[in-house]
Amino acid sequence: MKEEYIIDMESQKTLLHAINRTLKQKNYELVKQHTSHATLNQHRLKFNRGFLILMVAIVPIAFFITHDFNSVPTRDSNSEFRTSYLIDNLQGDIVETWVHWNIIDSERVTVNIVDADLVSAEKITAIKNAILSEKAVQIDDYLLHKAPRGTSSTYYEGWQGAILAASKNPTEFYIPRNFVVLESARGEGDITIQLLNENNSDGYTGYTKSTVEKNQILKSTITIYNVDELSADQLNTVILHEFGHALGLGHSTAPEDLMAPTITTAYPYISGCDIDALSALYDGKTSSDVTCKK
Image 1 (cartoon, rainbow, N blue to C red):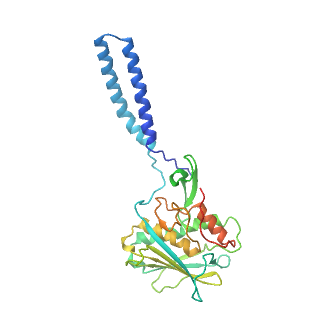
Image 2 (image 1 turned 60 degrees about the vertical axis):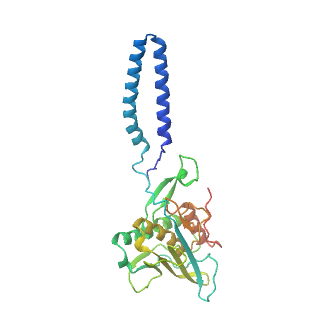
Image 3 (image 1 turned 180 degrees about the vertical axis):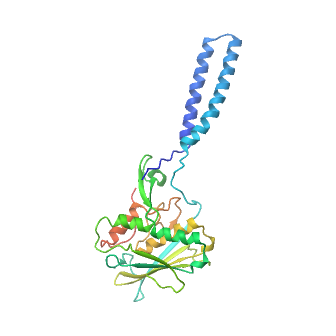
């Protein structure tokens, strides 16, 4: 996939300052060569006209140089989504988050969107893309405060693509990836997504509860609150995060990561450290918390 290069406006400012200095130096040399008042005025007039023409030409050029028309789309960075999750043992106690699904190779995992009629077709598509998309994107590491400009990392727009990447290395347990998405009001399915128009009393936008037995996930329920107030992109972001919990992942230590407890990043995609955590979890690691290192 083509790398995305995003050049900030500081490059434009630097370019214009350099041109300004060069033109001023040229004007100074012309003044030294022509001492008469009339000649000096003529050269000043030519300089001012030339500088004006150059400015008119350079600004549009600088815009096209600095504007990346194929850049990775960002999400509303002013939005903050609080999330939470719970691992509930059948015996009634709370267990650690190092649980995962234990299914056989190619076993189907049914995802059911409950009360899908509450939202538009666009929002249903956003939910399905968060689960089923295999699309990968390249994002400049500088934008996520991971490295200087010039390097980029691969992110995924859906869990299907991220799981395929995680499954390149064999793991002790099979990572679920044969997802079938349904829309039913009856609540059947291995993973259910409950859409509500009401508020959560604790201020959460998304909440995931997984039921386990012998440290294996039997069922996960994702609840999305205030779904009528969320845009399709925002709903996609929250589903991406909560579906990570439904697979067994905990929260990330990095605030710019998709799996952070409060989602604030403008690039809410599945990162390499999310994939590494998923691989480690299904290979017997004793913690599902996501540790992202710069």
